Length: 142
Image (tube, rainbow, N blue to C red; front, side, top):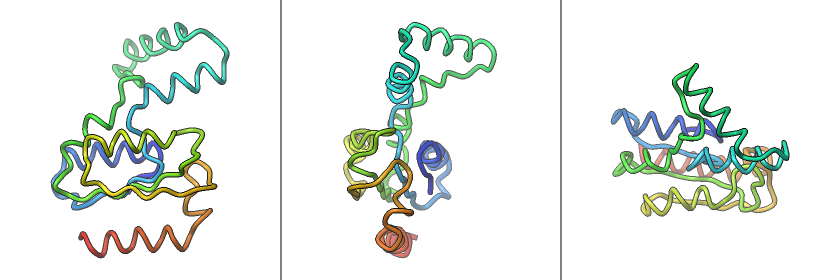
């Protein structure tokens, strides 16, 4: 189970380890580059060129591109193991369309939409419904 960035880690782990029998993704990220680009422009007001420069420096010094993180490309390796996604329809950090991108490549995944909530706060805002969905999913699939 992973929440927000942790959902990308859960996808990555499940795509590499068949021992993971099922995954729950809360406020899931499909394409980190899209999210970071949108937030960078909104928060800094700087041209996106500066972000690309920071990404190049990250690759040079850490060997890692944060703009290149795309769990949507890894999630295809998870089925036939089941996937449950929980996402807020009005998430302002990780838009609902990010969950829909996952659903496009893994149509057998189950997506549950919550309304009137904040990013990664589904459990806080809807504790009983959240627990019911997650527990039922794991009971039925593990």
